[in-house]
Length: 323
Image 1: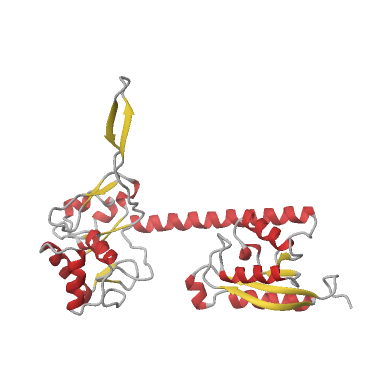
Image 2: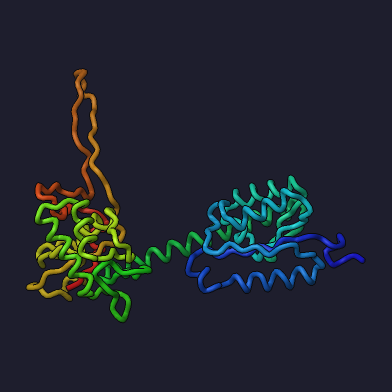
């Protein structure tokens, strides 16, 4: 007996994906996706061969363990269709969707999303392409609005809360500011004192290990990169009110005590370096100079924490202060 798909029983793979680790941990949308796919498969009379998930993987590329499993099963044969709730669950970009669809078609397998427009005709393929392009545009607009929101929050003197606060700090109750956490800040101060004594990274690693001071991740040996990040960070350096006044907006400055000192949390700051350039001077010789840097660390003879030289830039006002 024919099913509603008009071709008798078909063998299908159900594919679901979420794009972030947070979504993967909470299971957000995975259960909903699979439930919708099961209902569709049952209604259309598909024989479900396997349900495959990609937890915490972006659709910006095709390198995903779950999708690799799908492709292997299709290459082995006996798969008629790969079902996904939305076309962007398979891939976010039109070109990637096209590549995947072409690869699977070589093995006699189609891809189908529950929100597909049109049929298997050329017109249907065109509609699916337009649908995917519109989804790309929508995501780009969402990303743009999100970025603007982050910039606005930073200009107001608020931090952007991440998965874990910087070492030596905790987030305040509102999640938009940092509070000194003394048990860790004592260790951070110890690191700076060891540097001031002339110890290098390896010697500091050994000293902290021998003293039984665990790293931020709980490991007995501090990674050199972690030490360098702390030593280079402006969060741990005291800035006077005069210094701060050159870095933040007037709106933030009005909320500060001019007799206090502050650390700085940066948003949107990009690491840059100086590059030497050589240009002909018209006489067969070269004129050598340097491109202007945005932020270049100064060298320190005592290997103390470097103080960046701040040059004018759009990010110069995006600083967050703590006391």
